[in-house]
Length: 532
Ligand code: NAD
Image (cartoon, rainbow, N blue to C red; front, side, top):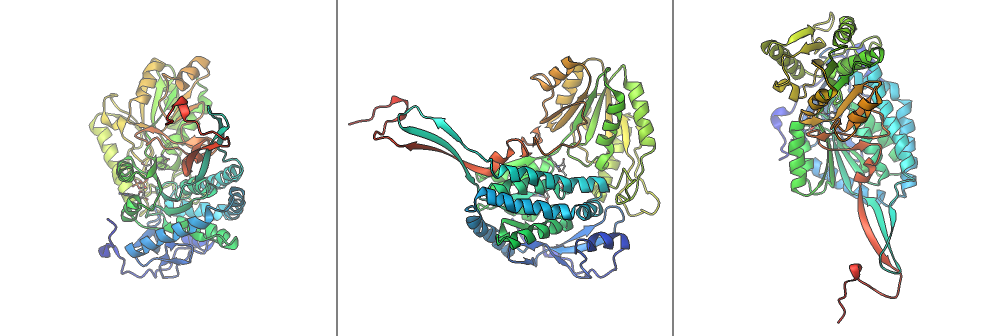
Protein backbone atom coordinates (compact mmCIF):
# COMPACT_ATOMS: atom_id res chain seq x y z
CA UNK A 1 0.00 0.00 0.00
CA UNK A 2 1.18 3.47 -0.85
CA UNK A 3 0.73 5.58 2.24
CA UNK A 4 2.22 8.96 2.94
CA UNK A 5 4.78 8.29 5.66
CA UNK A 6 4.60 11.61 7.47
CA UNK A 7 7.44 10.54 9.72
CA UNK A 8 9.71 10.44 6.71
CA UNK A 9 8.87 13.98 5.74
CA UNK A 10 11.78 16.28 6.13
CA UNK A 11 11.05 19.32 8.21
CA UNK A 12 14.60 20.52 7.63
CA UNK A 13 15.07 23.32 5.22
CA UNK A 14 18.21 22.75 3.19
CA UNK A 15 20.06 25.99 3.38
CA UNK A 16 23.75 25.15 3.90
CA UNK A 17 25.99 26.33 1.09
CA UNK A 18 27.18 23.60 -1.23
CA UNK A 19 30.87 22.85 -1.70
CA UNK A 20 32.38 24.21 -4.92
CA UNK A 21 32.93 20.60 -6.01
CA UNK A 22 29.20 19.80 -5.85
CA UNK A 23 28.01 23.22 -6.89
CA UNK A 24 30.02 23.10 -10.15
CA UNK A 25 28.38 19.83 -11.15
CA UNK A 26 24.84 20.78 -10.12
CA UNK A 27 24.89 24.29 -11.57
CA UNK A 28 26.00 22.98 -14.99
CA UNK A 29 22.61 21.26 -15.12
CA UNK A 30 20.58 23.93 -13.34
CA UNK A 31 20.06 21.70 -10.31
CA UNK A 32 21.13 23.99 -7.51
CA UNK A 33 18.17 24.10 -5.18
CA UNK A 34 19.32 27.33 -3.51
CA UNK A 35 18.16 26.33 -0.08
CA UNK A 36 14.82 25.02 -1.28
CA UNK A 37 13.56 21.65 -2.33
CA UNK A 38 13.54 20.39 -5.92
CA UNK A 39 10.27 19.01 -7.25
CA UNK A 40 10.69 15.35 -8.20
CA UNK A 41 7.45 14.67 -10.05
CA UNK A 42 6.95 15.43 -13.75
CA UNK A 43 3.64 14.77 -15.43
CA UNK A 44 3.94 16.61 -18.72
CA UNK A 45 2.11 19.57 -17.20
CA UNK A 46 4.97 20.96 -15.18
CA UNK A 47 6.85 19.79 -12.10
CA UNK A 48 5.46 19.18 -8.64
CA UNK A 49 5.13 16.74 -5.78
CA UNK A 50 4.11 17.54 -2.22
CA UNK A 51 4.74 14.13 -0.68
CA UNK A 52 7.71 12.69 1.21
CA UNK A 53 11.05 14.39 0.79
CA UNK A 54 14.01 12.25 -0.26
CA UNK A 55 17.56 13.44 0.26
CA UNK A 56 20.39 13.12 -2.21
CA UNK A 57 23.73 12.55 -0.48
CA UNK A 58 27.19 12.40 -2.02
CA UNK A 59 28.78 8.98 -1.34
CA UNK A 60 32.29 10.43 -1.60
CA UNK A 61 32.05 13.25 0.93
CA UNK A 62 28.79 12.62 2.75
CA UNK A 63 27.63 16.05 1.62
CA UNK A 64 23.90 16.66 1.49
CA UNK A 65 23.35 17.62 -2.16
CA UNK A 66 19.64 18.39 -2.28
CA UNK A 67 16.17 17.51 -1.06
CA UNK A 68 13.62 16.31 -3.57
CA UNK A 69 9.84 16.05 -3.17
CA UNK A 70 7.97 12.92 -4.16
CA UNK A 71 4.26 12.45 -4.85
CA UNK A 72 1.43 12.04 -2.37
CA UNK A 73 -0.86 9.04 -3.02
CA UNK A 74 -3.38 11.38 -4.68
CA UNK A 75 -0.66 12.86 -6.87
CA UNK A 76 0.52 9.33 -7.70
CA UNK A 77 -2.90 8.54 -9.15
CA UNK A 78 -2.97 11.73 -11.17
CA UNK A 79 0.51 10.97 -12.62
CA UNK A 80 -0.82 7.60 -13.79
CA UNK A 81 -3.94 9.26 -15.17
CA UNK A 82 -1.87 11.88 -17.03
CA UNK A 83 0.47 9.27 -18.54
CA UNK A 84 -2.45 7.18 -19.76
CA UNK A 85 -4.01 10.25 -21.31
CA UNK A 86 -0.70 11.10 -23.02
CA UNK A 87 -0.45 7.52 -24.30
CA UNK A 88 -3.78 7.76 -26.08
CA UNK A 89 -2.54 10.50 -28.41
CA UNK A 90 1.08 9.33 -28.61
CA UNK A 91 0.21 5.84 -29.86
CA UNK A 92 -1.28 7.40 -32.99
CA UNK A 93 1.97 9.15 -33.94
CA UNK A 94 3.69 7.17 -36.72
CA UNK A 95 6.72 5.25 -35.45
CA UNK A 96 9.22 7.06 -37.76
CA UNK A 97 7.98 10.36 -36.33
CA UNK A 98 8.54 9.01 -32.83
CA UNK A 99 12.02 8.03 -34.03
CA UNK A 100 12.70 11.58 -35.20
CA UNK A 101 11.79 12.94 -31.76
CA UNK A 102 14.02 10.35 -30.16
CA UNK A 103 16.83 11.51 -32.45
CA UNK A 104 16.40 15.00 -31.02
CA UNK A 105 16.46 13.57 -27.48
CA UNK A 106 19.70 11.83 -28.43
CA UNK A 107 21.17 15.16 -29.59
CA UNK A 108 20.06 16.94 -26.42
CA UNK A 109 21.64 14.22 -24.27
CA UNK A 110 24.86 14.30 -26.28
CA UNK A 111 25.12 18.07 -25.77
CA UNK A 112 25.07 17.52 -21.98
CA UNK A 113 26.86 14.17 -21.89
CA UNK A 114 29.85 15.22 -19.82
CA UNK A 115 27.82 17.30 -17.33
CA UNK A 116 25.37 14.42 -16.85
CA UNK A 117 28.29 11.98 -16.49
CA UNK A 118 29.73 14.20 -13.77
CA UNK A 119 26.36 14.22 -12.00
CA UNK A 120 26.26 10.41 -12.08
CA UNK A 121 29.74 10.41 -10.57
CA UNK A 122 28.77 12.94 -7.88
CA UNK A 123 25.49 11.33 -6.86
CA UNK A 124 26.09 7.62 -7.43
CA UNK A 125 29.86 7.56 -6.77
CA UNK A 126 31.21 5.79 -9.88
CA UNK A 127 34.31 7.25 -11.53
CA UNK A 128 33.87 10.02 -14.07
CA UNK A 129 34.71 8.01 -17.18
CA UNK A 130 32.14 5.37 -16.16
CA UNK A 131 29.60 8.12 -15.43
CA UNK A 132 30.11 9.59 -18.89
CA UNK A 133 30.10 6.07 -20.38
CA UNK A 134 26.69 5.50 -18.84
CA UNK A 135 25.25 8.56 -20.56
CA UNK A 136 26.94 7.45 -23.79
CA UNK A 137 25.00 4.19 -23.43
CA UNK A 138 21.74 6.16 -23.37
CA UNK A 139 22.87 8.02 -26.51
CA UNK A 140 23.77 4.72 -28.21
CA UNK A 141 20.43 3.10 -27.46
CA UNK A 142 18.67 6.20 -28.84
CA UNK A 143 20.60 5.69 -32.12
CA UNK A 144 19.55 2.05 -32.11
CA UNK A 145 15.91 2.90 -31.44
CA UNK A 146 15.83 5.60 -34.12
CA UNK A 147 16.74 2.84 -36.61
CA UNK A 148 14.14 0.56 -35.05
CA UNK A 149 11.46 3.19 -35.58
CA UNK A 150 11.48 2.18 -39.25
CA UNK A 151 12.05 -1.53 -38.63
CA UNK A 152 9.64 -2.73 -35.95
CA UNK A 153 8.26 -5.20 -38.40
CA UNK A 154 5.59 -7.77 -37.97
CA UNK A 155 5.22 -10.77 -40.29
CA UNK A 156 3.06 -11.99 -43.15
CA UNK A 157 2.38 -15.70 -42.77
CA UNK A 158 1.06 -18.18 -45.34
CA UNK A 159 -2.45 -19.33 -44.48
CA UNK A 160 -3.68 -22.89 -45.07
CA UNK A 161 -7.03 -21.45 -46.24
CA UNK A 162 -7.50 -20.14 -49.81
CA UNK A 163 -7.77 -16.33 -50.08
CA UNK A 164 -6.60 -15.89 -46.48
CA UNK A 165 -3.56 -14.06 -45.15
CA UNK A 166 -2.19 -14.03 -41.61
CA UNK A 167 -0.39 -11.02 -40.20
CA UNK A 168 1.47 -10.67 -36.94
CA UNK A 169 1.06 -7.02 -35.97
CA UNK A 170 2.92 -5.09 -33.25
CA UNK A 171 0.99 -2.21 -31.63
CA UNK A 172 1.83 0.04 -28.70
CA UNK A 173 1.41 -1.66 -25.34
CA UNK A 174 0.25 1.09 -22.97
CA UNK A 175 1.88 2.48 -19.84
CA UNK A 176 5.33 1.08 -19.04
CA UNK A 177 6.69 1.71 -15.53
CA UNK A 178 10.46 1.63 -15.20
CA UNK A 179 11.68 0.98 -11.65
CA UNK A 180 15.45 1.35 -11.60
CA UNK A 181 18.41 0.68 -9.31
CA UNK A 182 20.93 3.14 -7.88
CA UNK A 183 23.99 1.78 -9.66
CA UNK A 184 23.00 2.77 -13.21
CA UNK A 185 20.94 5.87 -12.50
CA UNK A 186 20.81 6.95 -16.16
CA UNK A 187 21.53 4.05 -18.54
CA UNK A 188 18.87 1.60 -17.33
CA UNK A 189 16.17 4.20 -17.86
CA UNK A 190 17.71 4.99 -21.26
CA UNK A 191 17.53 1.36 -22.38
CA UNK A 192 13.88 1.23 -21.43
CA UNK A 193 12.76 4.67 -22.50
CA UNK A 194 14.26 4.43 -26.00
CA UNK A 195 12.50 1.14 -26.83
CA UNK A 196 9.28 1.96 -25.05
CA UNK A 197 9.14 5.38 -26.74
CA UNK A 198 9.60 4.18 -30.33
CA UNK A 199 7.13 1.41 -29.63
CA UNK A 200 4.54 4.14 -28.91
CA UNK A 201 4.11 3.73 -25.16
CA UNK A 202 3.97 6.17 -22.28
CA UNK A 203 6.84 5.54 -19.87
CA UNK A 204 6.75 6.39 -16.18
CA UNK A 205 10.08 6.30 -14.34
CA UNK A 206 10.61 5.60 -10.67
CA UNK A 207 14.34 5.86 -9.99
CA UNK A 208 16.19 4.71 -6.88
CA UNK A 209 15.42 7.05 -3.98
CA UNK A 210 19.11 7.85 -3.52
CA UNK A 211 19.69 9.14 -7.08
CA UNK A 212 16.82 11.57 -7.65
CA UNK A 213 19.02 14.30 -9.15
CA UNK A 214 20.14 12.14 -12.07
CA UNK A 215 16.51 11.36 -12.88
CA UNK A 216 15.43 15.00 -12.65
CA UNK A 217 18.30 16.13 -14.93
CA UNK A 218 17.52 13.46 -17.54
CA UNK A 219 13.77 14.05 -17.44
CA UNK A 220 14.23 17.80 -17.88
CA UNK A 221 16.29 17.17 -21.03
CA UNK A 222 13.74 14.73 -22.45
CA UNK A 223 10.78 16.95 -21.47
CA UNK A 224 12.22 20.00 -23.21
CA UNK A 225 12.45 18.08 -26.50
CA UNK A 226 8.92 16.71 -26.13
CA UNK A 227 7.49 20.13 -25.39
CA UNK A 228 9.33 21.64 -28.37
CA UNK A 229 7.70 19.00 -30.58
CA UNK A 230 4.24 19.47 -29.13
CA UNK A 231 4.25 15.96 -27.64
CA UNK A 232 2.54 15.50 -24.28
CA UNK A 233 5.38 15.14 -21.73
CA UNK A 234 3.24 12.59 -19.89
CA UNK A 235 4.81 9.99 -22.22
CA UNK A 236 8.08 10.39 -20.27
CA UNK A 237 6.80 11.06 -16.75
CA UNK A 238 8.84 10.90 -13.56
CA UNK A 239 7.84 10.00 -10.04
CA UNK A 240 10.66 9.93 -7.49
CA UNK A 241 10.25 8.10 -4.21
CA UNK A 242 10.96 4.90 -2.32
CA UNK A 243 9.56 1.41 -2.13
CA UNK A 244 6.01 2.66 -1.50
CA UNK A 245 5.91 4.24 -4.96
CA UNK A 246 7.40 1.09 -6.52
CA UNK A 247 4.80 -1.08 -4.80
CA UNK A 248 1.97 1.17 -5.95
CA UNK A 249 3.20 0.95 -9.54
CA UNK A 250 3.32 -2.84 -9.34
CA UNK A 251 -0.22 -2.93 -7.97
CA UNK A 252 -1.76 -0.49 -10.44
CA UNK A 253 -4.00 -2.13 -13.05
CA UNK A 254 -3.25 0.86 -15.28
CA UNK A 255 0.42 -0.05 -15.58
CA UNK A 256 0.64 -2.48 -18.48
CA UNK A 257 4.25 -3.51 -17.99
CA UNK A 258 6.71 -3.09 -15.14
CA UNK A 259 10.35 -3.14 -16.17
CA UNK A 260 12.21 -3.67 -12.91
CA UNK A 261 15.96 -3.47 -12.33
CA UNK A 262 17.18 -4.22 -8.83
CA UNK A 263 18.00 -6.88 -6.29
CA UNK A 264 16.83 -10.49 -6.40
CA UNK A 265 15.01 -10.04 -3.12
CA UNK A 266 12.86 -7.10 -4.30
CA UNK A 267 12.58 -8.55 -7.82
CA UNK A 268 10.90 -11.66 -6.40
CA UNK A 269 8.24 -9.47 -4.75
CA UNK A 270 7.78 -7.37 -7.89
CA UNK A 271 7.46 -10.46 -10.08
CA UNK A 272 4.80 -12.00 -7.85
CA UNK A 273 2.84 -8.79 -7.50
CA UNK A 274 2.74 -7.88 -11.19
CA UNK A 275 2.09 -11.43 -12.37
CA UNK A 276 -0.58 -11.74 -9.69
CA UNK A 277 -2.64 -9.20 -11.62
CA UNK A 278 -1.53 -10.64 -15.01
CA UNK A 279 0.56 -7.56 -15.84
CA UNK A 280 3.67 -7.90 -17.98
CA UNK A 281 6.93 -7.90 -16.05
CA UNK A 282 10.56 -7.67 -17.12
CA UNK A 283 13.08 -8.48 -14.40
CA UNK A 284 16.78 -7.53 -14.49
CA UNK A 285 18.14 -8.70 -11.14
CA UNK A 286 21.39 -9.48 -9.38
CA UNK A 287 24.46 -11.07 -10.92
CA UNK A 288 27.13 -13.30 -9.37
CA UNK A 289 29.49 -13.47 -12.28
CA UNK A 290 32.57 -15.57 -12.97
CA UNK A 291 35.60 -15.42 -15.22
CA UNK A 292 37.45 -18.61 -16.13
CA UNK A 293 41.11 -18.44 -17.15
CA UNK A 294 42.56 -21.38 -19.08
CA UNK A 295 46.29 -22.23 -19.25
CA UNK A 296 46.57 -20.96 -22.85
CA UNK A 297 44.99 -17.56 -22.07
CA UNK A 298 46.76 -14.35 -23.00
CA UNK A 299 47.34 -13.06 -19.48
CA UNK A 300 48.31 -9.61 -20.72
CA UNK A 301 44.63 -9.25 -21.73
CA UNK A 302 42.99 -11.35 -19.05
CA UNK A 303 44.57 -9.71 -15.98
CA UNK A 304 43.52 -6.10 -16.80
CA UNK A 305 40.04 -7.31 -17.74
CA UNK A 306 39.54 -9.15 -14.47
CA UNK A 307 40.99 -6.12 -12.64
CA UNK A 308 38.37 -3.86 -14.26
CA UNK A 309 35.59 -6.43 -13.76
CA UNK A 310 36.24 -6.78 -10.04
CA UNK A 311 37.29 -3.24 -9.10
CA UNK A 312 35.41 -1.08 -11.65
CA UNK A 313 32.36 0.77 -10.22
CA UNK A 314 33.72 -0.42 -6.84
CA UNK A 315 32.17 -3.83 -7.56
CA UNK A 316 28.70 -2.28 -7.92
CA UNK A 317 27.78 -3.44 -11.41
CA UNK A 318 25.28 -6.22 -11.87
CA UNK A 319 27.97 -7.67 -14.18
CA UNK A 320 30.94 -7.16 -11.79
CA UNK A 321 33.37 -10.08 -11.58
CA UNK A 322 32.80 -11.72 -8.20
CA UNK A 323 34.23 -15.19 -8.85
CA UNK A 324 37.52 -16.03 -10.56
CA UNK A 325 38.36 -19.58 -11.58
CA UNK A 326 42.05 -20.02 -12.46
CA UNK A 327 43.63 -23.07 -14.06
CA UNK A 328 46.29 -24.50 -11.74
CA UNK A 329 49.05 -23.97 -14.34
CA UNK A 330 48.66 -20.20 -14.53
CA UNK A 331 47.15 -19.42 -11.11
CA UNK A 332 50.37 -18.21 -9.34
CA UNK A 333 51.41 -16.01 -12.28
CA UNK A 334 47.90 -14.60 -12.66
CA UNK A 335 47.50 -13.81 -8.96
CA UNK A 336 50.93 -12.16 -8.77
CA UNK A 337 50.03 -9.84 -11.64
CA UNK A 338 46.58 -9.13 -10.20
CA UNK A 339 48.00 -8.36 -6.75
CA UNK A 340 50.43 -5.88 -8.35
CA UNK A 341 47.52 -4.08 -9.98
CA UNK A 342 45.53 -4.04 -6.70
CA UNK A 343 48.54 -2.61 -4.85
CA UNK A 344 48.39 0.59 -6.86
CA UNK A 345 44.68 1.39 -7.26
CA UNK A 346 44.19 5.17 -7.25
CA UNK A 347 41.40 5.56 -4.69
CA UNK A 348 39.52 8.74 -3.89
CA UNK A 349 37.29 11.32 -5.52
CA UNK A 350 35.55 9.70 -8.51
CA UNK A 351 35.33 13.12 -10.18
CA UNK A 352 39.13 13.23 -10.46
CA UNK A 353 40.08 11.66 -13.77
CA UNK A 354 42.97 9.55 -12.41
CA UNK A 355 40.80 7.81 -9.77
CA UNK A 356 39.91 4.17 -10.48
CA UNK A 357 38.22 3.23 -7.19
CA UNK A 358 35.53 5.51 -5.81
CA UNK A 359 33.26 4.97 -2.82
CA UNK A 360 30.46 2.49 -2.25
CA UNK A 361 27.06 4.09 -2.63
CA UNK A 362 26.02 4.18 1.02
CA UNK A 363 26.86 3.12 4.55
CA UNK A 364 24.73 -0.02 4.32
CA UNK A 365 26.98 -1.22 1.51
CA UNK A 366 30.05 -0.53 3.68
CA UNK A 367 28.48 -2.57 6.48
CA UNK A 368 27.69 -5.44 4.08
CA UNK A 369 31.29 -5.35 2.81
CA UNK A 370 32.67 -5.38 6.36
CA UNK A 371 30.43 -8.29 7.34
CA UNK A 372 31.51 -10.27 4.26
CA UNK A 373 35.20 -9.57 4.95
CA UNK A 374 34.76 -10.75 8.56
CA UNK A 375 32.98 -13.85 7.33
CA UNK A 376 35.89 -14.65 4.98
CA UNK A 377 38.22 -14.52 8.01
CA UNK A 378 35.88 -16.70 10.06
CA UNK A 379 35.70 -19.46 7.44
CA UNK A 380 39.49 -19.44 7.09
CA UNK A 381 39.76 -17.84 3.65
CA UNK A 382 43.15 -16.61 2.57
CA UNK A 383 42.84 -12.84 2.08
CA UNK A 384 45.43 -11.93 -0.55
CA UNK A 385 44.64 -8.21 -0.68
CA UNK A 386 42.30 -5.78 1.10
CA UNK A 387 39.52 -6.70 3.50
CA UNK A 388 39.22 -3.41 5.34
CA UNK A 389 37.07 -0.28 5.38
CA UNK A 390 39.14 2.64 4.20
CA UNK A 391 39.33 6.37 4.94
CA UNK A 392 41.36 8.08 2.22
CA UNK A 393 42.66 11.41 3.44
CA UNK A 394 40.17 14.22 2.96
CA UNK A 395 37.22 11.80 2.66
CA UNK A 396 36.43 10.89 6.28
CA UNK A 397 32.69 10.84 5.58
CA UNK A 398 32.98 8.83 2.35
CA UNK A 399 31.98 5.17 1.93
CA UNK A 400 35.37 3.79 0.94
CA UNK A 401 36.54 0.18 1.22
CA UNK A 402 39.59 -1.75 0.03
CA UNK A 403 39.29 -3.85 -3.09
CA UNK A 404 39.70 -7.42 -1.89
CA UNK A 405 40.92 -10.73 -3.27
CA UNK A 406 40.24 -13.87 -1.23
CA UNK A 407 40.69 -17.60 -1.65
CA UNK A 408 37.90 -19.30 0.32
CA UNK A 409 38.80 -22.76 1.64
CA UNK A 410 36.08 -24.66 -0.22
CA UNK A 411 33.46 -24.50 -2.97
CA UNK A 412 30.75 -25.64 -0.56
CA UNK A 413 30.46 -22.32 1.22
CA UNK A 414 27.33 -20.22 0.83
CA UNK A 415 29.38 -17.09 0.13
CA UNK A 416 29.88 -18.28 -3.46
CA UNK A 417 26.15 -18.33 -4.04
CA UNK A 418 25.26 -14.73 -3.16
CA UNK A 419 25.75 -11.42 -4.91
CA UNK A 420 27.66 -9.06 -2.62
CA UNK A 421 27.56 -5.56 -4.09
CA UNK A 422 31.15 -4.57 -3.23
CA UNK A 423 34.67 -5.12 -4.64
CA UNK A 424 35.34 -8.59 -3.24
CA UNK A 425 36.73 -11.17 -5.66
CA UNK A 426 36.69 -14.81 -4.55
CA UNK A 427 39.17 -17.10 -6.29
CA UNK A 428 39.31 -20.89 -6.78
CA UNK A 429 41.75 -23.09 -8.68
CA UNK A 430 40.66 -25.84 -11.08
CA UNK A 431 42.29 -28.57 -13.16
CA UNK A 432 39.66 -29.31 -15.83
CA UNK A 433 37.39 -26.95 -17.78
CA UNK A 434 34.35 -29.11 -16.94
CA UNK A 435 34.95 -28.43 -13.27
CA UNK A 436 35.18 -24.67 -13.84
CA UNK A 437 31.96 -24.69 -15.91
CA UNK A 438 30.20 -26.65 -13.19
CA UNK A 439 31.29 -24.05 -10.63
CA UNK A 440 30.27 -21.23 -12.98
CA UNK A 441 26.77 -22.73 -13.24
CA UNK A 442 26.42 -23.78 -9.60
CA UNK A 443 25.00 -20.45 -8.35
CA UNK A 444 21.35 -19.36 -8.38
CA UNK A 445 22.06 -16.29 -10.54
CA UNK A 446 22.83 -16.41 -14.28
CA UNK A 447 23.87 -13.02 -15.59
CA UNK A 448 27.39 -12.86 -16.99
CA UNK A 449 30.41 -15.11 -17.55
CA UNK A 450 33.62 -15.21 -19.53
CA UNK A 451 36.39 -17.56 -20.56
CA UNK A 452 39.96 -16.66 -21.46
CA UNK A 453 41.45 -19.16 -23.91
CA UNK A 454 42.85 -19.50 -27.44
CA UNK A 455 41.62 -23.06 -27.90
CA UNK A 456 38.58 -23.27 -30.21
CA UNK A 457 37.44 -26.46 -28.44
CA UNK A 458 37.17 -24.63 -25.10
CA UNK A 459 35.26 -21.82 -26.79
CA UNK A 460 32.82 -24.24 -28.43
CA UNK A 461 32.17 -25.98 -25.14
CA UNK A 462 31.73 -22.75 -23.16
CA UNK A 463 29.17 -21.23 -25.51
CA UNK A 464 27.41 -24.53 -26.26
CA UNK A 465 24.75 -26.71 -24.60
CA UNK A 466 27.03 -27.96 -21.82
CA UNK A 467 28.65 -24.55 -21.32
CA UNK A 468 27.88 -21.42 -19.33
CA UNK A 469 24.20 -21.08 -18.36
CA UNK A 470 24.36 -17.27 -18.21
CA UNK A 471 22.64 -14.67 -20.37
CA UNK A 472 26.03 -13.16 -21.24
CA UNK A 473 28.74 -15.61 -22.34
CA UNK A 474 31.97 -13.90 -23.39
CA UNK A 475 35.20 -15.21 -24.88
CA UNK A 476 38.42 -13.26 -24.30
CA UNK A 477 36.25 -10.37 -23.17
CA UNK A 478 35.68 -9.57 -19.49
CA UNK A 479 32.29 -10.35 -18.00
CA UNK A 480 31.68 -6.80 -16.80
CA UNK A 481 29.73 -4.40 -19.00
CA UNK A 482 28.08 -4.83 -22.38
CA UNK A 483 27.31 -2.99 -25.59
CA UNK A 484 23.76 -1.95 -26.42
CA UNK A 485 23.53 -3.91 -29.70
CA UNK A 486 22.69 -7.30 -28.19
CA UNK A 487 19.82 -8.04 -25.85
CA UNK A 488 21.04 -7.62 -22.28
CA UNK A 489 19.86 -9.81 -19.44
CA UNK A 490 20.36 -12.90 -17.34
CA UNK A 491 18.84 -16.28 -16.64
CA UNK A 492 17.74 -18.11 -13.49
CA UNK A 493 17.42 -15.82 -10.44
CA UNK A 494 18.71 -12.88 -12.49
CA UNK A 495 15.14 -12.85 -13.77
CA UNK A 496 15.26 -13.91 -17.46
CA UNK A 497 14.79 -10.28 -18.55
CA UNK A 498 16.07 -8.88 -21.84
CA UNK A 499 16.57 -5.16 -22.44
CA UNK A 500 18.39 -2.95 -24.89
CA UNK A 501 19.30 -4.44 -28.31
CA UNK A 502 18.53 -7.67 -30.17
CA UNK A 503 14.86 -8.59 -30.11
CA UNK A 504 14.17 -6.86 -26.77
CA UNK A 505 11.85 -4.32 -28.39
CA UNK A 506 9.34 -7.11 -29.01
CA UNK A 507 8.49 -7.04 -25.30
CA UNK A 508 7.43 -3.39 -25.43
CA UNK A 509 4.56 -3.98 -27.88
CA UNK A 510 1.36 -5.98 -27.85
CA UNK A 511 1.22 -8.59 -30.56
CA UNK A 512 -1.87 -9.46 -32.53
CA UNK A 513 -2.24 -12.38 -34.93
CA UNK A 514 -4.68 -11.14 -37.61
CA UNK A 515 -6.21 -13.55 -40.12
CA UNK A 516 -7.74 -11.68 -43.08
CA UNK A 517 -10.14 -13.37 -45.45
CA UNK A 518 -10.37 -11.77 -48.91
CA UNK A 519 -12.19 -14.71 -50.54
CA UNK A 520 -15.88 -15.51 -51.08
CA UNK A 521 -15.73 -18.51 -48.74
CA UNK A 522 -15.31 -18.76 -45.00
CA UNK A 523 -13.64 -22.15 -44.43
CA UNK A 524 -12.62 -23.27 -40.92
CA UNK A 525 -9.00 -24.09 -40.14
CA UNK A 526 -7.78 -27.71 -40.01
CA UNK A 527 -10.58 -28.67 -42.45
CA UNK A 528 -13.20 -28.66 -39.67
CA UNK A 529 -16.72 -29.00 -41.09
CA UNK A 530 -19.50 -27.32 -39.12
CA UNK A 531 -22.14 -26.81 -41.79
CA UNK A 532 -25.81 -27.50 -41.13
P1 NAD B 1 16.85 -2.53 -4.90
O1 NAD B 1 16.21 -3.83 -5.25
O2 NAD B 1 17.06 -2.23 -3.47
O3 NAD B 1 15.98 -1.31 -5.50
C1 NAD B 1 15.67 -1.22 -6.86
C2 NAD B 1 14.44 -0.34 -7.06
O4 NAD B 1 13.31 -1.00 -6.50
C3 NAD B 1 14.50 1.02 -6.37
O5 NAD B 1 13.97 1.98 -7.23
C4 NAD B 1 13.64 0.82 -5.14
O6 NAD B 1 13.11 2.01 -4.61
C5 NAD B 1 12.56 -0.08 -5.68
N1 NAD B 1 11.83 -0.88 -4.68
C6 NAD B 1 12.20 -1.22 -3.43
N2 NAD B 1 11.25 -2.00 -2.86
C7 NAD B 1 10.27 -2.16 -3.79
C8 NAD B 1 9.04 -2.88 -3.80
N3 NAD B 1 8.63 -3.60 -2.75
N4 NAD B 1 8.31 -2.85 -4.92
C9 NAD B 1 8.71 -2.15 -6.02
N5 NAD B 1 9.86 -1.43 -6.06
C10 NAD B 1 10.64 -1.45 -4.95
O7 NAD B 1 18.23 -2.48 -5.73
P2 NAD B 1 19.41 -1.44 -5.63
O8 NAD B 1 20.14 -1.64 -4.35
O9 NAD B 1 18.94 -0.07 -5.97
O10 NAD B 1 20.34 -1.91 -6.87
C11 NAD B 1 21.28 -2.93 -6.80
C12 NAD B 1 20.75 -4.23 -7.37
O11 NAD B 1 20.29 -4.03 -8.71
C13 NAD B 1 21.82 -5.29 -7.46
O12 NAD B 1 21.29 -6.51 -7.07
C14 NAD B 1 22.18 -5.30 -8.94
O13 NAD B 1 22.74 -6.51 -9.40
C15 NAD B 1 20.85 -5.04 -9.56
N6 NAD B 1 21.00 -4.56 -10.93
C16 NAD B 1 20.70 -5.42 -11.94
C17 NAD B 1 20.89 -5.02 -13.26
C18 NAD B 1 20.58 -5.95 -14.40
O14 NAD B 1 20.43 -5.46 -15.51
N7 NAD B 1 20.48 -7.25 -14.18
C19 NAD B 1 21.36 -3.73 -13.54
C20 NAD B 1 21.63 -2.87 -12.47
C21 NAD B 1 21.45 -3.30 -11.16
